[in-house]
Length: 82
Image 1 (tube, rainbow, N blue to C red):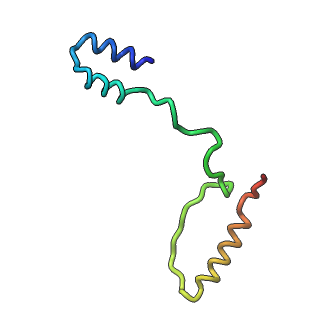
Image 2 (image 1 turned 180 degrees about the vertical axis):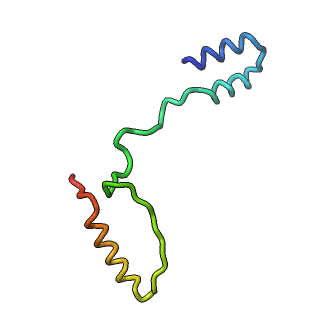
Image 3 (image 1 turned 45 degrees about the vertical axis):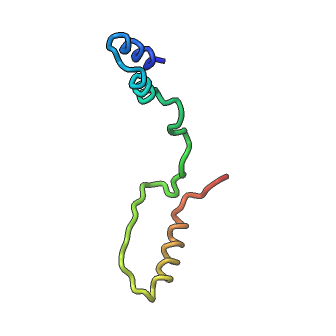
């Protein structure tokens, strides 16, 4: 690897104790795993960007308001095909 060659050259130039050299080599080693994958993650529910909102509502109207909002959101949602 590129980093290994650099560290080996560095070790020849300056006198570094072996344990420190191994630590530096391990710390700066290039990671070969992880990262993002194409197509991963949640798919968008709507065809435009969204934002969360919060507001106050009378306690007696909470259930009615939730039902209204849920029905409207389901109208606007993209149809998921599988």
